[in-house]
Length: 188
Image (tube, rainbow, N blue to C red):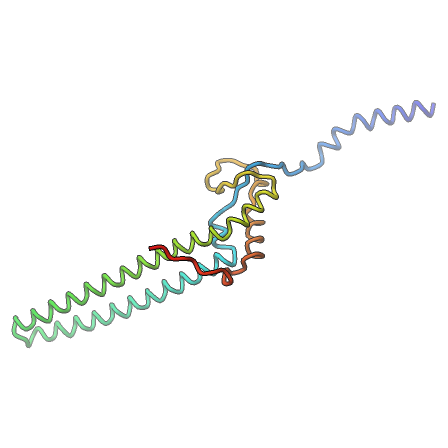
């Protein structure tokens, strides 16, 4: 009788096993492709944030300089307008032409500074990704993956293939704010 009970109990356990197994959360699948959010890497790593902070400071300095130049030009234009009332037309025309030339040169110079600032931001972004590539490569291999795709290029995926959080942590650990890296080489 005891043997029958044990066999019956064993059969009951065997019948319940699939139901118990089904209630356990599935293990994270191993994927040969992982994703990450490049914009988050730029914004949320210490290194990317330091680059963004430097760009923002330089942008604000340029905006402040532009405002000062605009105010100076407005004051000079008002002064020129007052002089028009008292100067002979030929003499005023010389001053007006000189003012126009000066204003155009200043505008061109400020636009050149703005373009250079944008070029430097793009260069810094390239430098950032060049420096984090080995870290991402090692992390990808550790995950058993053979490729990393930008998350924005993926239509549908399991959240378990997104390595952004882990990548941010690794980059912060290995590079910090990037201040110990050699300066990027400038390209002509």
